[in-house]
Picture 1 (cartoon, helix red, strand yellow):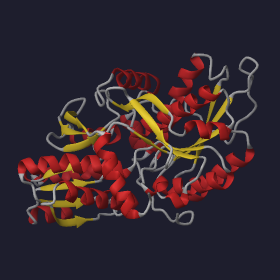
Picture 2 (picture 1 turned 180 degrees about the vertical axis):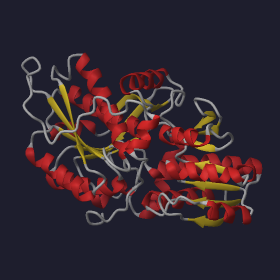
Picture 3 (picture 1 turned 90 degrees about the vertical axis):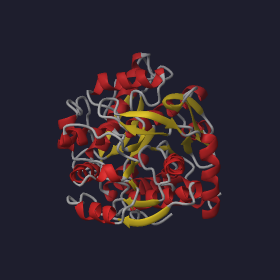
Picture 4 (picture 1 turned 180 degrees about the horizontal axis):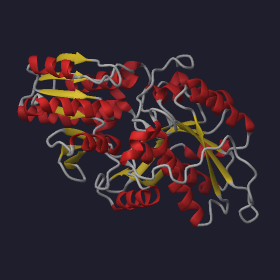
Length: 435
């Protein structure tokens, strides 16, 4: 792995102020503290202390709000049933402000203090890679809940024994998206493609992977132009005009939050979506949905989007019940980050209950190949698995569908199955020399 701080930020979220405008009461009950204080015994047992480092203030704070909302939901559920092994769960949130150096400092302080039982690395990729190095250096149990960058866990040379990823990986997202797009291309003879993605690590990796797999599944695809606006670039009309001028038939985008809102709003003025089919990996998240609806007064129809963290996606009772419970506690919709954090918490809980201990080495061993049932799991059994080889969760739901104007904002969702995703992933990883 590269040295600490070399990884570009995976992506930034909308500002805390903007997020709260569309998510009333989002921060209610979320306390940020420097470290655990003295705790009253829960019965006669010491509490289980969970620390999350995340981005709570400034641009990207939607990330922290989503993550802490999910941790608080898990804590409420666990403590209402008497805790884990009779021990109360305590949550402490520490704000990195999106700064790599602060993420490293806080993580090292937490791991060295021996006051916490587990660390949740709920940060962007730039911070996540650095926190992983702390976990590897100090052998401290850590869950990476947000970073989707494939290399975080895929490269065996940088394997960290106590580090586990519970976030989706870019590679599996792009396999699913390219399979979905490839099938539509075959039916509709869409051969001329454009891509547009923010000029950062998240945008470039996803575009590269999407093109790689689109050509595997639909060799006739021709990438006419690739466009790289800066993150938060307000005027994207030059890029829209370039795609229209090139007469492309379809476009793949990694734009998110304010960027996808600007692209949809400005593109509508040019009739972009009547002429070019848009495939958006990140439009299905409620942070993006709310921002688009606020800006346009409605949600656009006929865009193809990746989707999860939706009460109907996946269409399982466990997902619907979880979505309702999250919304009741937090008063704002969950995001993909929320799902991923909750998955990490449930894996941690299940491992502890399995071995009857919070000993980190024992928990680490119990996590490998551990399966749980969760709202993010693929139908019909909703199972998720922590893969032993690379400490990455698999079997989560991978869905793509077509947008509609009203809630739940997506229809005709197709779930891509892991019996197709895993062989495609393996082929790419072999080419990289990672397996």
